[in-house]
Amino acid sequence: MRWNLRLTAANKGIWKASELQRSLAEHGLVISAGKMSGLWSGQPVSLKLDDLDVICVVLGCEIGDLLIPEPDKVRRPGEEAGQQAAVASGPAPTVVPRRRDGRSLPPA
Image (cartoon, rainbow, N blue to C red):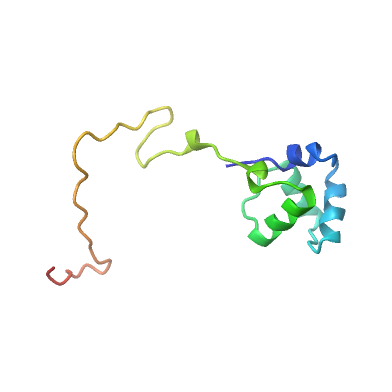
């Protein structure tokens, strides 16, 4: 996912992080200067869904305006960058459940 807060805010006429921070505080979301700087200039590692709701209300936007999917960046385990996933031509292999403690499961 790509975080698109700055462009979304600019489209709504908000050009400074401090402007957005004040608007968020007016709607009950008080964000520290450090966290606001991270939201404004970087990509957040985590964000509460409630906070995301307030940001959307303040900016008058949808979640899809703030979070842009980047499916090309998703890799399967063992797949190298740039390598395309092969389409399976046969039936899917049977999955056998196993216990984590090493004990066998009862017969089916």
